[in-house]
Image (cartoon, rainbow, N blue to C red; front, side):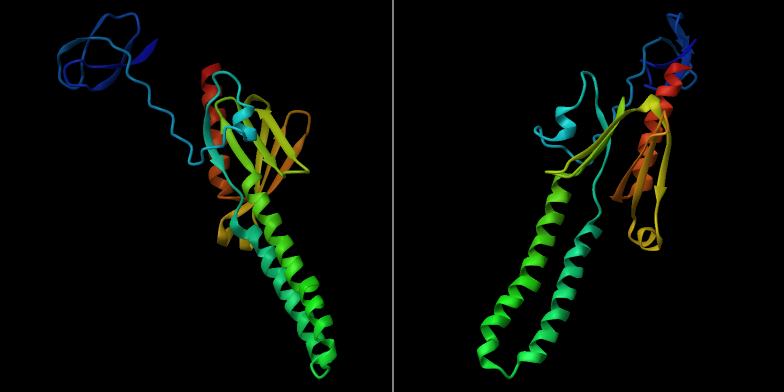
Amino acid sequence: MLIKAKCEHCGGIFEDEILEKNALCPHCGKVTPVMPATPAARPTPAIQFSPSGFIHKNLMPGEMVTGTAVLHWVIYLQIVYAAIIGLILVCFFYSDFSGAVSSWGAFIVFLILVEIVPVGAAALGACINMKTAEFAVTNKRVLMKCGFIRRRSVEIMLTKIESITVNQGILGRILDFGTIIVGGTGGTKDPFHNIAAPLEFRQKIQMEIEKISATIR
């Protein structure tokens, strides 16, 4: 059985039989005691979840987050849509009542109801979605959660994942966002939309699955 060993003379890394006490270093040519090489540290995820968040509270003993993802800023486009529709309606209303001074009160009320309230609601909803969405892959599972009041979450063991599909339209390809669909055993498919850098997140999941598969083999 081969293990990675580290030469105590030159620090070079090489493979040798685990049962041997000494080995000839191929780098410096000196005989050195076989020492296990220091394993590479796991990369620190780009996003640190809050201790009160879904991911942090649901980690099992010995479970470490190795990759994360977030919602894409494209979700804020709903604010722009609400503002444009509101402006169109306000312009039509103003063209009909611009000559009536007595209608200014009604116009202001109409402006608040059609423009300010919808835009504010859209902005609040987008901010809540951005702050509460959590997507992570650990050395054991994939955990994903969206929503605050109406919460939707998925926790699936890496060994139970059969497929990971990424759907991206033209705009998604340009702006780098898309839908991730995790397929588990039993035919379950869980889609999560508007994920930023979905291909990178899928690659992180696949890397963890490969590590588990290598350990089993």
